[in-house]
Amino acid sequence: MSLAAELSWRGFVNQTTLKDIHKLDSHKFTFYLGVDPSSDSMTIGNLAIIMMIKHFINYGHKPILLVGGATGLIGDPDGKLEERALKTNQQIINNKQAIAKQYRKLFNTEKIQIVDNYDWFKDFNYLEFLRQVGKHVPMRQMLARDFVEKRLSNKGKGISYAEFSYVLIQAYDFLYLHQNYNVDMQICGSDQWGNCIAGVDLIRRITNHTVDVWSAPLIVNPVSGIKFGKSEEGAIWLDPAKTSPTAFYQFWINTQDEAIEKYLKIYTTLSKSEIESVVSRHKQSPKRRLAQYALADHVCELVHGKIATQQAKQITEFLTGKIELSKMKKEQIKLIKQQITTIYSQQDGSIAQALVNSKLTDSNSRARQLIKEGAIYINNQQIKRKFFLKEDYVNECLLLRRGKSYKDCALIELKK
Image (cartoon, rainbow, N blue to C red; front, side, top):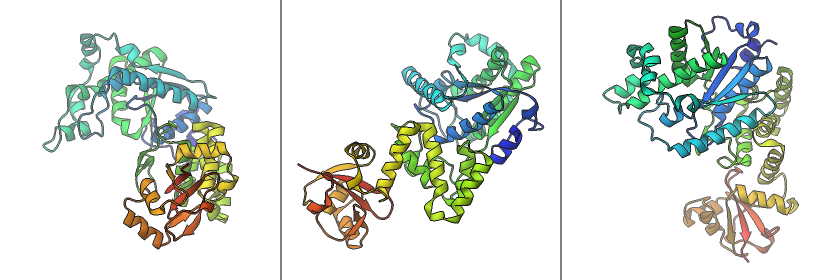
């Protein structure tokens, strides 16, 4: 299968300047992807693009991964309704280091080059920048950008000169990398298309060279229509300190059947035949969730490694009742305590109070009602009583659950 065919089958074809996507098969591009260090972690939205890049690399294209130390000091205004709060230099430095570390982990088997645009902007004289870059960018082009029009409209909240100039900085990145690293393609998320095209235009005006852009499609949940990677709690992060490996693993386990094949194509490097086999076996027995487990295993192992994935799998099996508390080792219970709410209770403590203390409900009256309705479980057994019993505690703790979802669990430790 060619790269063009691979990207088409996996759903990675979106906007591009290429007149024929099969040029990917006849020409080896040196491409770059830029990420601003607006946070100390990337999300699974970034991961989708990273997975696409892995296919580019596998077919012989050369990657340069840019961490935007300069652009991060300003912040991309595109898609934002109001001005961003500027981050401190130290915040940007910390975030850059964290993003670069994630890059190296995710591409641990591929050869990559990481660059920082702060390196070529830190000594760039302002007047030089206006002469070398600003002189070649028409104001009409910048004012025509959708986000600029919205921010400058009567209902908009305005835009500072700093954020207005962001596109110039990113456009120059493309020019600099083209001139110094022979970069002839920028890869981006669909929301960055306008910024990337500005770079294409700047390169054409200054060098008379033609370069290209390939954008990844926005990943949208086909069932809910919500941008993928977002949940009620917020973004799904790649940093285990922000989204625990267990929560990360469970996110993929919860994928709806209607979306599972799409996500297997995007978020794993499984071959076409392997994915078709997984999906076929899944359809024969959907309740076993074979495809969801395959997806969770592959993505979690890529991001968090084999050991963390195995631990996340064991904790998930415990929370879903596949492994009893009596069969859990002390080290495993210690991990569970780190990843779900844990509180203390007396041996004969109030179940209603424990539900409130663990934030499984917000009031004692509501807790009592849930108990009466049979919506509360101890060690995966439905209960309708008011107090814990001695036999509830196994290894000096018990699992308290609200409803059938293993997301609404808390570990109750015996207070000594």
